Image 1 (tube, rainbow over the protein chains, first blue to last red):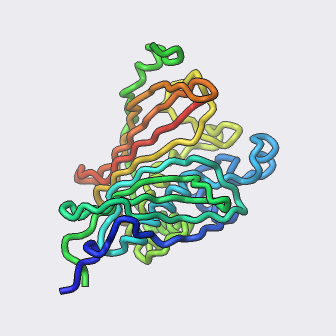
Image 2 (tube, rainbow over the protein chains, first blue to last red):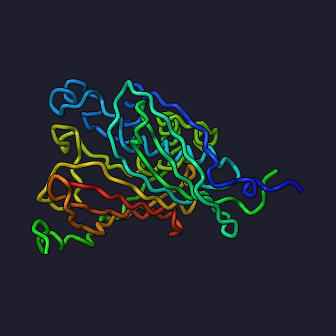
Image 3 (cartoon, chains in turn cyan, blue):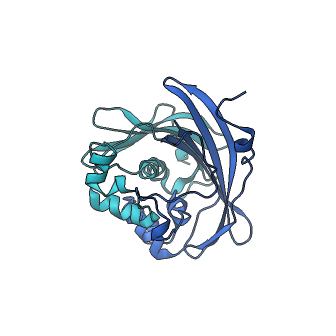
Length: 143
Length: 151
């Protein structure tokens, strides 16, 4: 019998880094899917001249979604995302390249749970959305 | 005692929204999955909703004349706060079971807390809203706690 995947995971293991460069079409689709008409996401003169932002603001929950994705894509079919907590610390704008990633903090073999730190970083390497998540692995490893 | 949080304002803690029921349509899952750049086939095909799809599912569908000039809809669960400028907030989500196309889900939102903290540039008001989502059998689907900061 080979080791189950859970048994091979160690604290400090890194999640794959994924790069995001959202454009205004993606941001439009995202806010349309929500029914979110906040002008800072699509009205360039409003965002810059009235609100004083350097550009169109990437929606905060979209960054949150990417944190969720970094966990479910890492876990795959071996488990589920049980819990996630994150905050939007700093705004980001269309034109920026962002990166999601994370690392394993702790493993609870009895509960089959892995605690993860997840982040969205900007080009300056600032963490603009930090989070922690719990991934729960299934009892039977899938063949 | 807090300077900003009157007894009248604090009386809003515990206020609960009317339950909202929504049917999960495959098309809506697909749109959300594409817009968020999902990579897994089950999400892109709309069989299962990716995490955080509930944010879109239960976003208030308001009429055009109910939007403020900046395009925002007013959250009727919230009282008028003495501070108004919203700062970044946070979210905590517990997922109990996946959301599948065809699910009929019910969400209830509760204003669970209001508190004040001293920030470096003045007072801050924090408030927390908990959204409970259950399926047609009343089984828990997810619990989401939003924390927002006003300055």
